[in-house]
Picture (cartoon, rainbow, N blue to C red):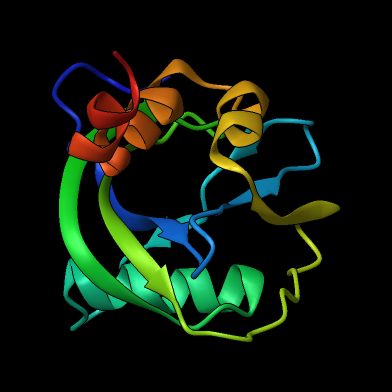
Amino acid sequence: MTSPGSVPIPGAGGVVFDGDGQVLLVRYRSGAWAFPKGHLEPGETLEQTAVREVREETGIRATVVRPLFETRYTNDRGEARVIHWFVMQAAPGAPTTLEDTFPEGGFYPVDVAARMLTYPEDQQLLRAALGPALSAGSS
């Protein structure tokens, strides 16, 4: 457990869309489906971290479109984390090549991905990433 005054370890991640409007998810060995994310390296900006982590974890080259909000949690090692999230766009034609950490992952239609996501915070991230397009599609 973390102590109440401990400073969370910063990180960044991406809600990555491909050219067809599908969203990138990864499945952890625990079974949880989530978005790619990771820790800040010394000297990196949050945007650079998000781009690097998406590429390292999935092989997908993506660019930041806009910032989203941050999420906070305590990982399975008891470390407080704060993750800064970005909407990202995948480069066309890049195949997904997952890190060994992830037994499964890839691009999924938004409605399918919304049901697959394990954590409510990630479902909120997806809704926020869709933004006005989501409310325009519902009447």
